[in-house]
Image (cartoon, rainbow, N blue to C red):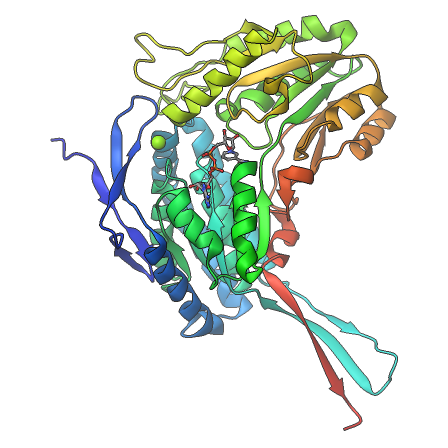
Length: 487
Ligand code: NAI
Ligand code: MG
């Protein structure tokens, strides 16, 4: 029996509530266009309620009395529950944003590990004892949670982004109001229920679903927030910086990129070609650190580009729920239109596609938003498709002649998130690692992630770091305490 799409509520102060305006919007499965659920359309009034609940939870009740050991246990319980419900979460993300089930299952495993990592950090927060020149003075620093945090997240990894924002909040003793992307609200809502089951006190983790220009803008501007974390486009990042200026809240931003992946002729070219495909096309290119500018030493450029295209053409594209699928659909009709616009632009300015290049339709792709992995040759650094973040499966290959030249061209972008280098030379690996302006440089690998290693951007790719100890530290403020021992 078909019951039709269910209705999802906001989660505020530990309770499911309707949006104050009573309105909802649909969330759609991008593999076939079917409506999965109706989502509450939260607005400014709902954000007010959520921030008030988060403030109460920060200052009163059980949460401020949680010791580091209590917070550690809470994170470990949440990790165990996520592990228990791994399959449900993997399916939610696959159905709502299209990512293949093999990929979303793998993500849950990593996120369970990430929560356990944050559980460890919760027990090792340290201040300092300082040494003023007056011997009568004792001075030390202590770390205190920054307060009520907001987070606005994108749709390309909804569970991933929610866990990444929640983990450090729980490790530090802050509270959180999360605004998911309108295309992907289901996993964040389910995570909030799991947090309650784990014993997170009501009000510590609130989820307000809705549109960016309504709930999102209200959250960014809210005077009751002490910090806001945003992951998404540069343009929206700028709007958030402006909105946050009212009460000068602390900011952290992860704004994507146009990351270079540089292949020298002395590299292990087989490994480099396989990795170049993953770097550009994983999650159908909807990855902030995707390696979308593939610089290849001129002598091997054409042959290497063709090998990349051959490997890409073998990827199976289809419904993400099929365990054989390598690449799912793009998240939405809007994103498909954006990717097709970039494709038309690239072709009309002289680039040529040696694989992919047009939307997939027909019996196995039907109404889904499918676009194949596309490898461009004859691209130039000044083309729009080579300068702007596309967030789809389009890879530009670009020949280069010399090390100094490729460093300069790789850096000639407003972005600076990730960079890949493939070489057999130790010296070159070091020179490129230091010469590239990026938050992360991967040598003879690409897009590696680990809970213990910080990640983030320079220039327009953002500010602040996620993962690692640094991520939790950004949720504390330092207090200096002075005691005059002569008194
Ligand atoms: P977006 O940056 O507009 O959306 C991300 C989040 O921001 C969503 O939750 C959205 O509701 C919210 N938002 C939108 N406008 C807002 C506002 N004025 N105030 C507060 N919150 C607001 O990204 P969108 O439109 O979904 O995708 C457009 C492009 O952005 C993509 O093609 C891609 O290039 C880039 N992008 C980058 C991501 C990354 O991980 N770096 C993730 C998603 C998109
Ligand atoms: Mg969707």
